[in-house]
Length: 439
Length: 170
Image (tube, rainbow over all chains, first blue to last red):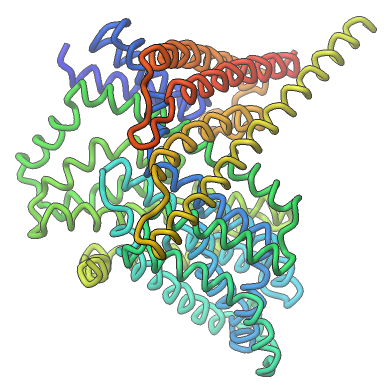
């Protein structure tokens, strides 16, 4: 049997296990182990397992994942989301739809500390939905804004998804963080424009608040500037090459702790809760990383990735057509699957295809640009129907709001996301300009 | 009936103990990660002030990450934190889904046991050949042994969650 056929059978078997509720990391581990043994032998597989689980995780780059998660968890438990939201609302609340824009602005700030969209969504749902209710915002619109704002957690660097992309494709994390900044800020602007339009179309859904006087605005800002300074130091330090992403995340954790303890927003209970949350989230990611490692070792033995890349480059398909096709595939797959598992499963096959395409760019640029495109489709997958994880998170917290009305609230933002995606596809400079300027 | 009740109670209490251990192990792993963060800060500051960071900071981060990750795994399984796809089994009867979940817990227990066994062998190899890290000459074998022990604990946790699941199904 040819290697590629075995790989396809392995893939199909794994998808069946996934459909039968097997946890994603375990399904990849199971299918990968069987496939690996098929191509080699049981003693070789046993030998492989003797060192791989340890050496995979004893990895300097991987350490950035728990550290960034811890930094975000500490920010969350210290009540940063509420503070940011109040500060932004003091400035923007009097505009039509201003409270919504304040939410998006606060999510942008929070995204500069936190690298996870689910965490961002959950914390803002708890912190802001009661406020939206108090000021008589339409509940579906408000829920939609929180679900979409949550994606800024990953769209604005640091981003766990980008770290995983960097590790799988052996790209530079700092460069990917640079490339994500402009498309991420573009998302903030686009979301605010959507809110402004929606508020004008239906003023009753997004009433304006009273103007807040300047002295009070300043008081709200004073509480959040230390944390924003940390965010700028961490991301700026990584951009400037002052420290590695791991060091940046470490600095961020320690600084968050110090600020939290000084401002009395972090006590022992909050720190312990942050650690527990970090443990659980990191474990969930690392078990998928272990499964992906074994599964990809199996795929590499089958030579399927090389075969697929050759097939596509020799097929005469237009290179941009291939990119668009892959992105559409991702949006559809993201509708039914966990986004992290999706990119870990597909990148070993898609990445060689994409970097072999003749797009008139150096392969390194393609690799960075494609990472940002993947990040953006992941963002869409997290909010778009039928299965948007962020919408589920919001509806789990706002139990009285029907999920259909949250999806209705999300749709205008998803359209804006698709436009933004098309822009970055058409103009790779939106992602690459900052990278080339800074390096 | 009363006998069965006490049996369940004992199992429940044993389960609680395991849950508490899983929590303690995870917190210890998190504390290790925090300590690593502090070490990294010291390294960055000393590099800035004296042009040289903490000696062997890279390998300390590496070892700490591996040990911390294995410390996190049992708690995640205990609290059912592992993601799975439920899209295709939403309409399946509850007993069917619960049986599947029990089965996968057992498969996970099996893999964890396999990993524990292989890692333990790898650890003994490393200890007997005195394998050590590049800069600080830390004995890697003991770190691997620690991950092997936590993988074994993960196997126990997964088996216990399977039993609990099976009981709730019957």
